[in-house]
Image (cartoon, rainbow, N blue to C red):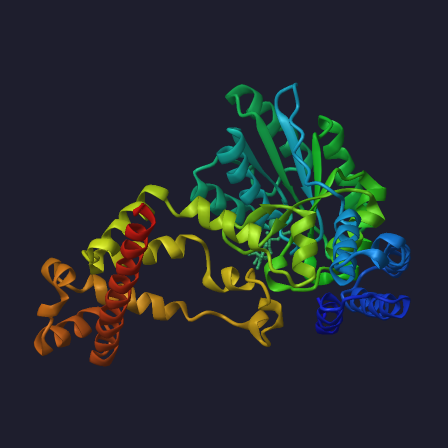
Length: 439
Ligand code: GDP
Ligand code: MG
């Protein structure tokens, strides 16, 4: 959010006692940080007032760790501002459940339609139907069809010679026939909020009262996102918000004010262009993230769902017995890659927002690609007994993988070092264990 706020928090955290002046100084920074992050002015005022009242209260002044108390209050209030607990999706008892995706052009509706469908299938066991109701641009229909193909999910599309309302009506009928229980309608966007668009959305809404109307907004548009949310909400009544492109933006301004302005919850956040980059919105984590504590919970969750536990045990055993080979190395590399793009993972680490330039940084994934290529160019024997890789073999591997001999040498050296380190580490563990079990 802001380096200045971070600085003030650090200063106060270490303090033994907090005076009213300290609180005032901190609130000034908080106010500044929020305005800078594009938070609605009215929201900022209310927020600062609330936090100040609590922070100068008796509890804080008499507490042993007043600095931490204040930080906690700021975090709690930020969480509260963003809507308390995370929200779930409403499913209809009358089939099918209808979810409308609405928003301006380029906000991420089509992408999110795919992500949401994929997630509902995986986590809720739903059978989604994607509906291409953006009939104004042929490319938009194609885009949804491509996404459907990629996810192996059915897409209902009828080209561009049909009205969005009619296509939605047919899609709902089709879903009933085919026992598809969740219809997700990807509606057309506009560059600006306009009457025609709102009328069209109202007509689609009238077909079968949608169980959810999700407004998709681009977090990078800051204060504009808040206005858009307010407009859509007043015109058609949204049930929730999906905030996209949060991966490219460290400012949480939109998340902070959308909820308090519309009174509608943010249900999901888009964290990347890939189909699995949709996460439930956790206000508490968002608050931590804004305060620079890093989004450790999200990160741990991500790691847990991707790294197979049995595999991890097997690796540990291999470390211990030093039978770790290049095949295992490749295996590990693949698992790390499954966690998602490395730069996204890096950004979730605590303090990451303090590293200058990281928001624009791209981790050199081609480096990982090179390593992978080198290992794949090795023979089976070379992978298990790398000591046999002589100069001739190195040349061959470099050529086969499209890298240089230097690249190959570097990797071999790294691998040797890693093995040495593992041996030492597991040696230490063994000793430790023996000691522990002695009477
Ligand atoms: P629509 O016009 O509202 O349907 O928007 P699209 O779904 O076509 O998305 C517009 C662009 O934003 C595309 O290039 C998407 O890949 C990109 N996009 C959507 N969601 C995200 C996100 O969460 N993170 C990032 N980085 N890009 C996104
Ligand atoms: Mg679209």
